[in-house]
Image 1: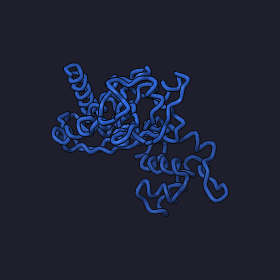
Image 2: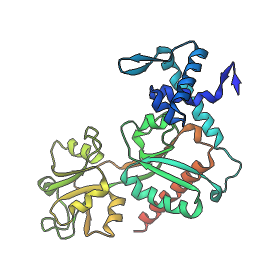
Image 3: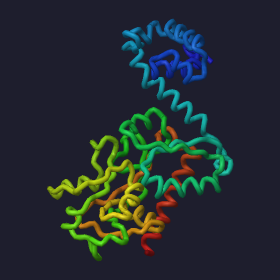
Length: 308
C-alpha cells in the first residue's frame, strides 16, 4: 500500500535503519538480506530526497533530517502494532501473545511469580519475558521494547498510564540464631553490626533504605553488596549481619529460611509499587487481563497482611 507514493511496507525497514544506523543490523532486525536492506535504503533516499545515513569514519550517522524522522516513524509503528493486537475476543484462554515486563527481583517475587502461575492456568497462550530494571527503562517503554513496568511509583514515566498497586514497609532481618541481637534491634546495634545491602546498578542510584540511613547523618557498616533484595537473606543466615528489605518479602523468605523479622530502628518511608504500561496498549485485552490479575494479587496480599 502506498500513501503519497511511500510504500508503507518500507516503514519497518526505515525504523530499523534509523534505530541501528547500520544496514547489516537493520537487515537482521527486519529479517531481510543485506542486499535487500541496502535496496530499501536506496528507495527511501530517493523518496525523501535525503541520504538519511552518511559515513562518519567507520560508522554511519543519521542526517539531521533522518534524526527528525526517528520518533514519528517509530511512534507510527507502535500505534500500528497496538492496533493489530486489538480483538473483539477477550476470553483469556484465547490470548496468544508475549508480554515483556521490566521489574525488580522484589516485584518478581511478590507480584510476578504468582501472576505467571495464574496465567498458566487462566491464559496459557500468554508468554512472558522478564527484564531487569535498567537506567533506560523509560526509553524502553517509549520504544515499545517492554510492555509493562512494575517498579517504584516515584520512578513512573509521566508519558504513560500507571497506577499504584501496593504499599509496603521495610523491616530488618537477622539470622534466627544471631547471638548479638535480642528481642529488639536497637539503633546502636543497627550501626555497629555488619550489613548486607542491595545496590542498584553501579550504586549511583540509592535505595530507599540507603536514603534513610543517610538522613541520620551516620553510616552503616556494609560488608556485602548484592544486585537484588531477594539475595540478602541468604547472606544474613549463619552470620551476625543485618539486612533491611521489604516486609512482605521478608515474611515470604522467612517461611523457608531461619530468619527473624524485626522493626527497623531507623524510620524508612513506605515503598509504593506501581504498574505502568504503554499508552497505546491501554485497550489491549491481554494487557488489561494482566493488569487485573496484578490488582487481584495485590489485593490478596493486603488482605493476608491484615489477618496476620
